[in-house]
Amino acid sequence: MQHIRTNIFARRSTNICILTVLLVGLLMALVPLKAVQAAGYPQLQWSDSGLNLTNPYSICVDTLNPYRLLAAEGTSEKREGVFAYNWKSGQKTQINSLTFDLCGENGLLYTRLSPSQQDGGFRFSMGSNQSQAIAHFPTNLGHDGTTQVYSFQPAAGPGLSHLWASSDGGLTWQERGQQFEGQMRSFSVAQTNARAVYALVQARNTAPNTLTKFTVYFSPDAGINWEKRFEGEANNDYSRGGVAVELGNPEGQIIQTTPVGVVNLTYLSGGFGSSARAEYYVSTDGAHSFSKVGFFDIVNSMVLRYTGNNSFLRYTYSSGDAKLEYSTDGAKTWQASNFPGTLTGSGNYPRYIMAVPDMPTHIIMAAGNIIWHSPDSGRSWEQLVSYLADSTVFITPYSPLSLLAIKDNHLYYLDLPDYAKAAAAPAQADSYNPSNNFYSATGHNMGGVFKNYWEKYGGLSLFGYPRTEAFHEVNPSDGKIYVVQYFERNRFEYHPDLAGTRYEVLLGLLGNQLTEQRRAAGEGAFNHFADMHYPGGIYFSQTGHNLRNTFKEYWEKNGGLAIYGYPISEEFYEVNPDDGKTYVVQYFERNRFEWHPENKGTPYEVLLGLLGNSLLKQKGWL
Image (cartoon, rainbow, N blue to C red; front, side, top):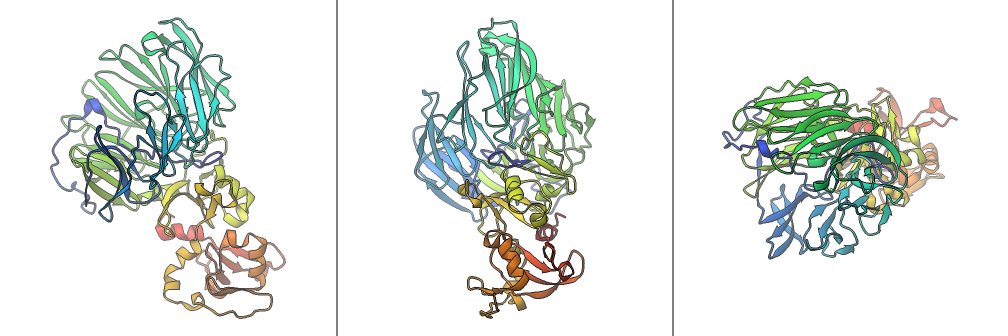
């Protein structure tokens, strides 16, 4: 999300578990598919994976291995196990004989105890057949790449509520919120920083059916310390067991790429049937203030999406009138979207509206028999592909992006390789993220362990400014998925399996990646060399290259193997693509050294190549 680990990244990341589509239930009159391909967008077509799911009752996208959908299969009488469906290879593989009810970050899956037991469960990893008992079943997950989870048990009537926090995915727990004099009625986790949380508290023993005061608190450290943010009033509804207001993202109204400062309140009234009504309010300043954005009842509905840079997209339906509007000022004022399709009439209502994980300015919406795409938070739209009637749609929470559709338990996919470039678009400062820094020079945020690593191991001179937000990407070196962030000179990769060590953040092998074809072709200095026995030099048999003189001195003084990796070339002359000048250079697994004799005797005699910029340009993102 948003990212990480002691605090989190500036943006994140994504509900990984069952990135299911929001089906706007009251409005969804499904229509037959009229064409295989939407008119006007002939280059994109669904691909048939050739895979059929068998009795799936829980589905999620694999967060460790790309191109895999995970499904817990079987019946209530007989659980068959967890199966992986690789939509690229067309292979179905049984992962284990277990089951799961919830998908967490970093490949963690959770199973509840029997329905008769209210708490507790089991945890296991994707690919493992061994489960571990956990004292509390997680009710709130972060989506920032960490294993921070929470279990919130609201009070029944006048009883006490309980909140437990776990930083290791549920293996160990600490109770939080005991200092509140009132009852916690609602709890919400910031999606881009799982340690940033909100709690809604009301006074204990309040008389039913009276107007009751409540307070919204914020904690930057997983519930250890709390700050009062907002006070309001709501009906103390006896039928709902307490104050009739909810905090967070009820019914998926705000998705997982929202920054720390965005949170919403829902005021409930009426009964639980046709008389029920919900009024939505949203805050973009960390719950200091809220703006009303709409309501929902038996004949009126609303879908709200945070779309990045303090913007929102809103769909409303009332008495036959449908509107699609966007806001660029934190949901205070609204403008009509330039949507070219039809949102009223039989079968034209949106079947889902979702933002691309990690890249919320990109919106995917199905209306009529077409799936539409907006690159600019809903201002403009293009036809993307046909909508497969009666299908459930997912989008992968990592780059390269793919759209998935399950129709009659058959799996289809659509590759969207160019859409991930939104991660490099200028962003807005996530000023309510306690760990965040914003760099106006490039328009990007940096926080959490990435910020800690950047500051500890070299900062601006070694890594440069951030050039993207943090997002999930398939690593070309090992084919696994990591939370990454590109900088001018490097790519940072988060490795949660190495948490607490120097290697929790690793630098991407950008030198290898950018020279892959040159090395494969045996180009000059990239050939395998013998030990040249240079005076004071080092020979690396691992890659077959020598290191000497100024480059050796710089390599040893500024991080060595951990920062730059092994040399993958000898010294040679090369034209710098950024300034057009020729320098003596040497490539390493993670960077390129340039010798600047005009700076001799200064820290800038050796400069690092802007390999982060170069790779982003190669991708077409810059």
